[in-house]
Amino acid sequence: GYAVPGVINRYRDWLPLTDTDPVITLGEGSTPLVPAEELSTVLGCEVWLKVEGSNPTGSFKDRGMTVAISVAAGAGSKAVVCASTGNTSASAAAYASRGGLQPLVLLPAGRIATGKLAQAIVHGAKVVQIEGNFDDCLTLARALADEFPVALVNSVNPVRIEGQKTAAFEIVDALGDAPDLHVLPVGNGGNITAYWRGYTEYARAGRAAGTPRMWGFQASGAAPLVLGHPVRNPETVATAIRIGNPASTELAIAAKEESGGLFEAVGDDEILAAQAFLASREGVFVEPASAAGVAGLLAKHARGEVDSGQLITVTVTGHGLKDVDTALSRRQSVAAEIVPTEVDAVARACGLTD
Ligand code: F0G
Image (cartoon, rainbow, N blue to C red):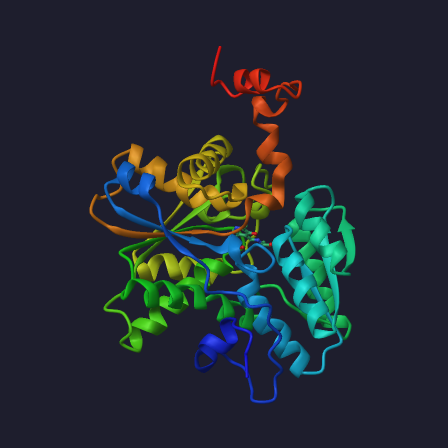
């Protein structure tokens, strides 16, 4: 019969599920690897975008969540909890609901993109807005999971990382080998850890000749891994990565060091410019945080720090529709003129005549 695709069905041998765990999937993974023609021309490299906004809830979080919720359901959990800047909560809400578990989500009040908040609400999560930032929410989520019968599904839950590593598998499976360089945004440090694990496991199994250097980019107002210490009041337009004390700090540093990579910071203006570049030149609409990798790559290229001729993959982590408020707030041309229902007037408004 027909099995819904998804990362568990595609990569089960590489994942920590037992025979009795149910497979709770929405068909995540197998996302497009899109050649970035314009970026490739600018950089003199072969650049590919791993478009993770194409996952069921619009971000890479679904790869880990299918595993986390399947394992939680297999263990008999009735409820799951997470802290989130928005995407984890959207994903947890969807997968928990599908598996018949109650999702509880702790969010920094007023700092969640509208689309993500809508997802948590519509999927039936109990949404608790906290007077604090993501780091405070994560502390509280851990405490709830310690004291009550609810499973924690943040990326401090190791099975989340296991699911997310499948993105690296897909890249190697598509390209036939690992890239020279992998670039991605970094917030809590889970995803860079997951990619590094995926690349190293595949290399060890002989599926790739080597592993890429990992370049992680943070927003300059929320760059604890660049500074080397936690940031008390992280601030950035890229709310998804507005994190001051990453839970996976040690593992993220290991990924950077073992791969010969780096962490650097990019400014909010660079992030928004990269978001606009991706949308208007490559046809790929991503949320602000998701553009941080491209922003970093462009900034380093401008400083002459990107060798040409490399095979580069860049993860764009979440869909632009998650946060239309930010995208539109920077555009003057939104308030387009309203024209009468006449061809001449419409042609003039389109710039086809004067
Ligand atoms: N990009 C997006 C769109 C994200 O939502 C996140 C993290 C990241 C990048 C950074 O990934 O944390 O693994 O280093 N979002 C989490 C959340 C924190 O709650 O949705 P990371």
